[in-house]
Length: 386
Ligand SMILES: *Cc1c(COP(=O)(O)O)cnc(C)c1O
Image (cartoon, rainbow, N blue to C red; front, side):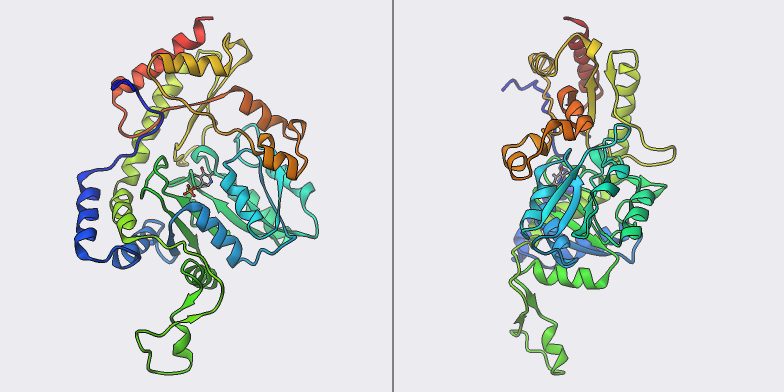
């Protein structure tokens, strides 16, 4: 590929991360150990402290552990949105439980909170909202609804670090569990990784046990003052979801930079907004005044008057050396979800329309001003030349 090609996403890894990984490698302790512990402590401090943070090897693992800890069982129903990555819903299937899909709200592209209520049945146990693109779901409304019906809330915050709703950071709200992703293209990365965050000591304890084979090292304490170092008890058939110290070493330094990363992405979003204002393009929804948008995605929608379809637009952008992406092919269009739950596009008119028109543009910290200008001029020429 052309060396001048601007990829859709690219991680921002500095010498600090590299040196920390090297020292972890030299330390002789590679798997979960002091660095993972330090990353969890630092992450909790970032969220204002007093919050339990459990580092895991992916957000998918974190969502799985979260649902396990709140007691999701076969036959249960969990309400979520069709307009997301498959991980949000697949974790529900891990239990033999069933996702119940609702459309997104056209003004936020997050789950349509008003549409949740009519999907609640006696089997409904939980809601998984997705902070789409890094724009926070209205947590006051969502938690209010969940409370009225006695439902658990597990936030898929894979896009939302850091983001706020009513000036309160996602991860600090009263939901049961919040899960962040540190996949390579997310707002901060550990290569692969995630963080399960909870205000509940019981959920945190269960997640810590289940992320590592169901091993309970504290169990022996109950019966004896002496705890031999070799002793542990298996209390459940757990998983292998722990974060390595190598990954945590990257995360420790990404976390220190993440506020600066957010500012850089926000600036790019503002430059795009200004440049595209007069074009036949629908711009991404904005956060409320005073709120922080994580800007994981900058997703435009081509208007019917844009004179170009999505497919051609992406090809034109590619022809000008720019990588774009589509978020997402909604779950109701994927063969598995479609057939397992008899889903049809008409059930999700907003998501379907978003899908047909959407294009995500590059938005990441290592883009230069010239890169941003290049994207802007390429969007203009791709839209206006028909
Ligand atoms: C990336 C992503 C996930 C999964 O994150 P991993 O860390 O790759 O497991 C889940 N949900 C959404 C919305 C995502 O974008």
